Image (cartoon, rainbow over all chains, first blue to last red; front, top):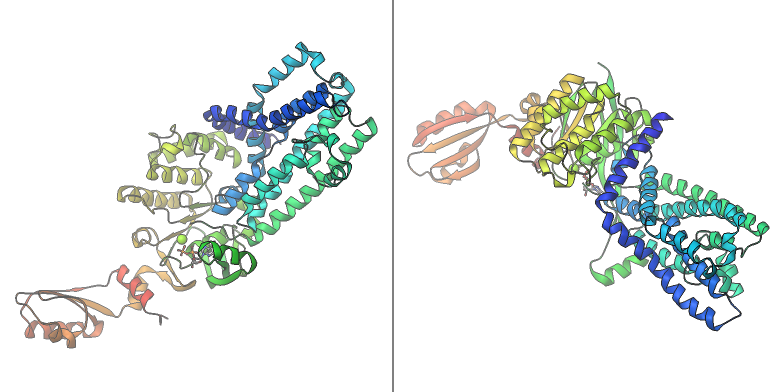
Length: 267
Length: 328
Ligand SMILES: Nc1ncnc2c1ncn2[C@@H]1O[C@H](COP(=O)(O)OP(=O)(O)O)[C@@H](O)[C@H]1O
Ligand SMILES: [Mg+2]
């Protein structure tokens, strides 16, 4: 166990070193991550001012600012590296060493997220406490946070494992990167980044609830904003867990089957 | 001595997707994929003893890399079995991975954005090397491979030769028992090639490591390996010592002639196969048992200024093996 943490610690140290080489890019990435939710925010904020039946302006603002954070925290791009390394054979370096490759991705993911949160998080907290009345009062209810935090963690794991599966598609398809890009675009709609679930027509909403994406962004926000009751929140946490379980099983199968047919291109 | 690598009837074929060129071809390919089967390794059997240094040689596409990839557990074979240190490589057991190392060209363990030293520290932790063992191992590698000049330099800034030495250091710092080297000297200049060869030899002697080295440079193998395995079209064309190869397969000598007056090509034809012809300089290929007789005849019939009889070089033998399909 101690040796395990030593390995993890070493990779963390190296990943920090690597990311710090790219610090300027990382700030740009966090702006990029925020840009789509900000555009949605501007759009829906106007709608909320003109249409008193939907979300209130406070709720709209709170929702999309939350989405920025949830998106930064749950975002996963490890499938990009995985697919790339499978297709050009670089994955070999992980296959020949006695330590699971997935840890490199987990560590890369968490380190870059920490950097991306460095500027937006303090800003958000500052605004939250300086101008509390611009935000939905729901966000200040402690019990909501108690459910929100586990939901956010589950969302993060779900997003990461789902990306992993898409990366493994490269064992079968040379077009794995394009498929990933489609998934990412579709995810913007299906996870609630462009349109809050609460504003979707009921049939669309129901249909999208059968996919994993809602549980990555919308669900944590719904829980924190009190759009789901306590019982509903528990149910949502359960769904998240079930999705994670299914997707880990899928990832494991794809990995095993993929390695068996892998031709190790390059060289 | 005991057998450490045992390969039995091992084969590997690849399914290659045939793609028509151009956009129309890509569209067609979406609906109607055509595959071709390439047999890269064709039913090979081989056993290697602990501490042996074996050279795999063969032309490009012969199946050398494919064989090493199977022995490293990267590729599942199409049929046959292999064991390395009693493990089946493609099960990728932890204890197998801890005790073997693969160096394949330039793509290996090093982190590009960080100094070489960081990657070596990572190896220390991943392979659970004791701090004191690591220190002495690093010191030894630094001396043998001249690492001290670039140990603290970002890997992306290193030259090809420095990077290759870095890869070797990362691959050997944990003292693997089995080392698979795929073209370790490719693209390196002569001086670095020499250095790398010397290093491999020293490592093998010091740790009694079992090494397979592939190359299409004969120099690598001639200097390093006593045992030579020649692979061609996925099959083993020869397995034995270099001297034996020359003895067994070459029953010819080369007569190198210099004349003081031009000699016509047709006049030389009865005396042997002409390998190289210039009016004043010619090389003939003759059966060994005829060599002296022919040389004597040539000396009396032609205006010979100089004559010499050469042993065939390893290069020639191998070239003959590859062009002549009916080897034993
Ligand atoms: N990943 C791959 N997919 C399809 N064919 C391959 C692949 N790797 C190698 N081959 C083919 O298999 C044969 C043997 O290749 P290889 O083992 O790389 O030979 P060598 O290392 O002796 O040059 C070649 O015909 C090569 O084109
Ligand atoms: Mg090769």
